[in-house]
Length: 84
Image (tube, rainbow, N blue to C red):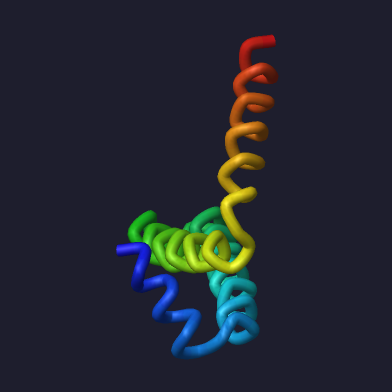
């Protein structure tokens, strides 16, 4: 499956995929706001979450393996905050 992320970047280019990431984040924000106001169902939010997750995986391809190291650090920090 990760190969599809490389192929998308190859086909449309890194710059276009970064712009798409921004767009998909905006659509998720809008879906969450509409959900909060009772204008969206959870399934609508789920569709936007899926789009953002796909784009996040493409961004990991672009920005490298350090993303996972930073994620582990931040999850550990979250865990410590929860336990306090």
